[in-house]
Image (tube, rainbow, N blue to C red):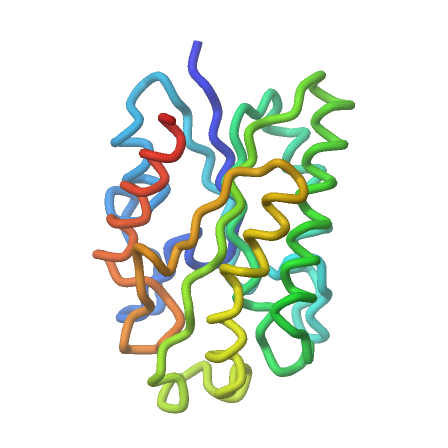
Length: 210
C-alpha cells in the first residue's frame, strides 16, 4: 500500500515556467520529480494553484485563498499520509500589507485545520512538512510582476524562515527552508527555474524518507 503525499501550494507547486508563462512538464516540476524519486511506495498529489494565498482573499481573484479549498482538498484525497505545505509568497503582494509574521500565522491557521480536519475525517493526523517559500529576487523591479510585488516583498521574504520555523515548532511540524535549495529565476525574480525544481524535489525526498 502506498503512502499519499499531498503537495499544497501556489504557482511554484503548480510548476509555472517564467520563460513561457506556461507549466513545466511533469518530469521537470518538483512534484513530478518527487514522484520519480520516491517511487511506487508513494503517490504524490499535485495541488498547486497560481496566485494561491494562505488564508487571505485577493480582491481581484477571491477564489485563490488556500483556506477555502483546503478542507475539500483533504477530504477528496483522504487518507492523506503526508502534507507538504508551501504557501506565503502571494501574501507578500502590496494589496495585503502583511508582515512576514502575519503571513506565517496564516500558514499556522492552515496547519491547525489540517491537523483538526484529518483527525476528524480520516482518524489520524498526517505528517506535515511546513516549507518557508523561496526568497524573491533582487531583480524584482524589472519583473513583469512588479507592482503587485514591490521591493519590500524582497525583505519580507527573507524573514520567512525564522517565522515559519516558529510555527513548525509550535505545532509539531517538520520544517524545510526552500531558499536553502532553490532561488527564483532572474526572468521574473519570483518563479523557480528547472534546476530549482530539481533541487527542491531532492530535498523533499530526503525529508520524507527520514
